[in-house]
Image 1 (cartoon, helix red, strand yellow):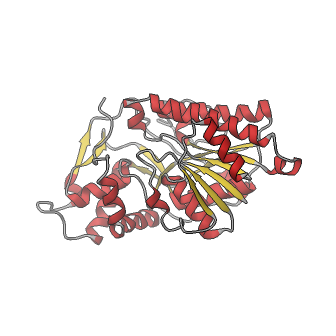
Image 2 (cartoon, rainbow, N blue to C red):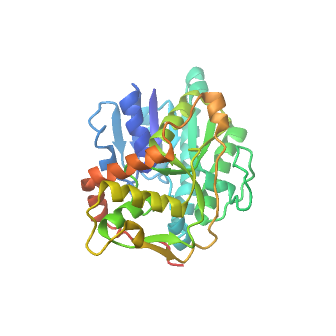
Image 3 (tube, rainbow, N blue to C red):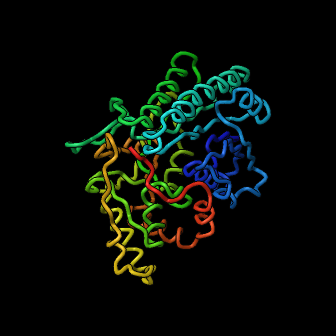
Length: 353
């Protein structure tokens, strides 16, 4: 099988590529424009494979996309390319509309044109798998409910609104044109190779440097944490076994308040890195509460029973096992994150409003 993976040099995309090259015989075409969060070093362990190809292409460039479909003749598309950080979307929503909405539309049209040229059997087996987020569903504050595949959309941020828009486009291309699409919505991912603007890697690296550990509001926001390699396995299962027209929610069954996530990381660092930066007695002393994000959703949580029931997927990692693996990975891969930090990202909490 030949898979064209947009955003394949990003955090989740690179995990998908590493999983496919490492655990299957499939061929991968990574399509990534290498914006700030795309990093080819996240693919260094698989880039020597003859089944790996890389093309630096922006998904808004229709001519370049047409050329890729013609050159590689993929059996499926896994669409992960997206602007994905809520804080950045608050400060500068334009890039999110351009990539997540216009880019998805452009990719759908390129895929549809290619799909229409295929022979009957190839046409029937082709898949366009759109990878999205649980943030499209909005906020679960004040309830014990979980997001299901039929939860109404109620996005809160420019980021989640742009992803909701892209989800609607993907479903419309199936309904209107028959393009065989599948949508997945996932909870918060964490794990190796995570760009350090996001909560978990930011806390790990700031703690190691003796810098403040910024926590929004009082830290009571709840997220369902999904280890990225578990997510990568789920996505491959969906693109190869999922039903056309279906939506699958993918979650880790690991609800935690943000403040508890931060304290867990501090406890692990006390154990693994007892020699602290000068002047730091306990890593938890570095916790600093900062002004909350505008419109910040209090709780997200996913009901992932459908993908377990229909495709047999469950997460292998608990939060405790996954967060330990993650902290240990950052401790053992300083070269990777130092090179990221040496670039344009300075380790600040993004979002000035």
